[in-house]
Image (tube, rainbow, N blue to C red):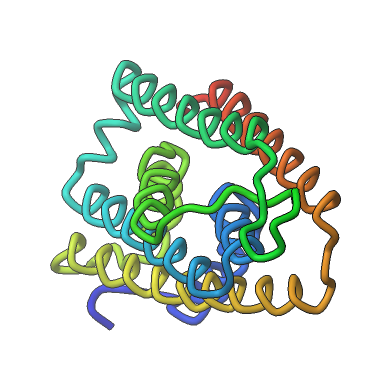
Amino acid sequence: MFGTQDLAMFIVAGLLLNIAPGPDSLFIMTRSAVQGWRAGSIAALGIGSGTFIHIFAAALGISAIIATSANAFLMLKYIGAIYLVYIGVRLVFSKQKVSAESNTSGLKLYEMSYRKIYIQGFLTNVLNPKVALFFLAFVPQFISPDAAHKSVAFIILGLIFNFNGMLWCHFLALATAFASKKIQVSHVVAFWLNKLIGVIFVSLGIKLTFTHQN
């Protein structure tokens, strides 16, 4: 259909790949735990928007340039790594805030506006060269060799992948927000959990710098 093949296998494999933990999932869970499911959903929409860029870039051949050009790959890789480290450092050094409701000193996780959440989700995804390489390596396997318009088939598969990914991401946002309310984590635990998440983001950024083009 539309030049695709093994569509059922593609959907299953795509869902499994979306479920695998990474910077995107971690960002959604952090925002949902801190600010509720709406913030997590907005983070998911930002990530989905970033995925759209990768889909159309790969279909138009831009990602192929990144895959074959060492300089282009290195530039995007280091920009993405620096951004992940920046997010992590902000979380690690987030300070104690005063609770306006109780007028007592309380430890509160760093909150962001919905606009900033969307932009950060978008940048976290679009600046990750591993996502571009993933689309180039994974999606073409499900395009029929005799497809008349391979770029159209690529876009269709990419949209299916992103749609399924958004279903998982929004479920993750809702589940995390629900769990955070039920668990009722103390301020001190939440504060240090924020630090831990920051360290994980920094480590992901460092790990990205060692990603090889091949």
